Amino acid sequence: MNRKLAAFIVAAAMLVAPLAGAADGTPPVNDLQALQKSVKADKKAYVSSVLRLTDAEAKKFWPIYDAYQADVDMANRSRNRALEGLIARDRPMSDLYAKQLANELIAADETEVRARRKMQNKLMRALPPRKAARYVQVEAQIRAIQLYSIAEAFPLVP
Image (cartoon, rainbow, N blue to C red):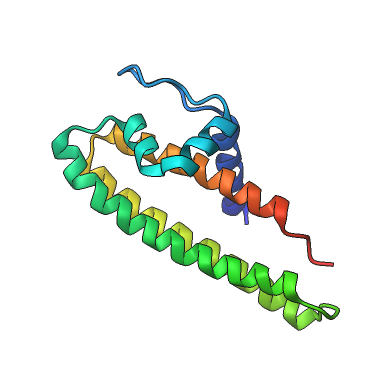
């Protein structure tokens, strides 16, 4: 349980702490609303502008990125199905359904964590460690914003 709490604290700190400007002159991201707009407009272009990959790095990075996005989309679909079921429910929630909902949400989180670990392992071999770490930070910020939007939109279990 302490590991989960520590992971949550790290994730929260990554959300609150803006990305520091890199030594190569990448501007810091201080405005999360601006980040959200940039990502909605073109996430790949935003990631590319932050990472400033060489041609050789880009050739290695983008397949890893695409595979990770596909894995995260799968987790998102699972999470969305569970939450849509909560919204569409027209009768009082049973304890059994509440347990099922909790299990589905945790399973989606676990799928996402496995995808992130797989992506990070590949990134560390494909990119210089600083660029790999920068992408992990950027992706964490983007996911935090997306998860906040989900939390804001869906009601708590009654």
